[in-house]
View: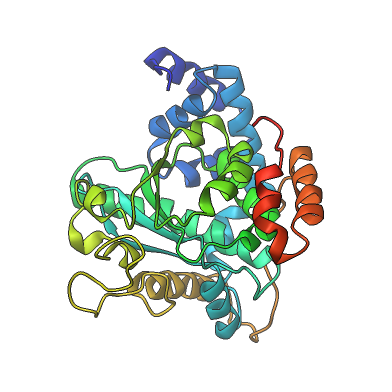
Length: 334
């Protein structure tokens, strides 16, 4: 990461002051009172190049205005059963805080199926989680720990990972691209835990799709990662899947009543759900419950992704040939 000087931040700040009023308004909502830190994030994402950071930021602000991102936390996924289905198939939650006050976000990569709704619902849900993190969780952490907290830690659970997870590569690429372009430098470290043998093959496919600065933040831990993670957080903040005795063990190291932070019934998700519902009620009268996702424009898949998808379709046609096919799979940039 390059050194970001005060002069760089000042230059970018001066340029941002010249943008149109709608962009200024969404920028205020986005930085939430921490303008300097937000400008620094975008500068880091573009290696200190002020003009490139400006373009990235303006593109982000235009995306927010065009897709009404400022209002997305007032757009619930209805009805409740559909939202519960999204939660059950897009496993993500918050388990606590690190010792430095960073929120600990848990993601169940291996067991997420993304098969209960259209891609638009999953994208909407992901952006809502991002916005809730930035507007509610991080400001709360800043107040609680008495210092600015602007990033989080993500723990990716690979339990149950199968090669069929690569069928969701388009959705995962869309989500990753949205984060890279519009929520840069919000994650301090990505910890990979409970990685089965097939993980290395999947990582070989996914790795080239990630930005280099993202790849450098990835750390693969042994087994459940419990011992390593306890160096940076208390036991109570460990996600449930990290409280195991060892690699592959399903038995918790203490009592079995460990909260599943992926569950819709977990306090984090109940608070998020009620927050969105309350904001929706403030916007206007409650409309009849109906299906309908909040569509957000997202980037077209990278050309390399289409090559990968075609190659996967050819090579992963039957379960018996999967392992050999993955060893032969060639990905651009590998």
